[in-house]
Amino acid sequence: MEIILKEDIIGLGYKNDIVNVKSGYGRNYLIPQGKGVIASPMAKKILAENLKQQAHKLAALKVDAEKKAEALKDVALCIAAKVSVTGQLYGSVGVNQVAEELKKLGHDIDRKIITMKEAKTVGDFVALVHFHKEVTVEIPVKVVAENAPVEEKKAEAPVEAAPAVEAEAPVAEEAPAAE
Image 1 (cartoon, rainbow, N blue to C red):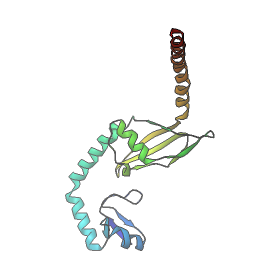
Image 2: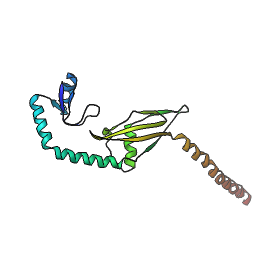
Image 3: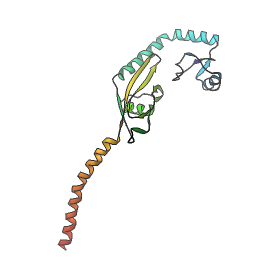
Image 4: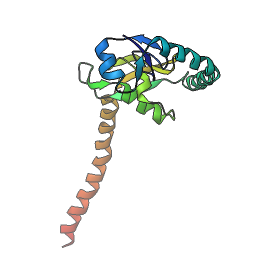
């Protein structure tokens, strides 16, 4: 079944693309949700005319997408996650964590335009950001263990706490001597 998409659907196609889908997917999901229409000959003619008239708008959208992509060109993410002794993550690092890290860096990117194979181990991965059908940015994502820095901080804390305990002990001993 041929469908003309009315909006971008990651993994299927972009707005105004004509795609072949299974009949059930088209009839039961895409058309009722308003994400596509049946690609009849008349609908294809209307689509061609609309694309011809909107060529300058589409060019402006592409330029805007290229500007956003240029801003993300040199961005590399480092995400800390809880890791077991064997190097396996508790859970996984996915699109949501990548979107949160980008937001912390000042890039407000919708998680729906990011694709990434979920990271279940420590290592280097690649997240793709699809701004436009012709503009995609690869962002390197490094997943590191958060356990190691936490243990160093815990080791320093008792050293600082020990003198405080010793300072309290002589005060307690002096009080009975004063009585």
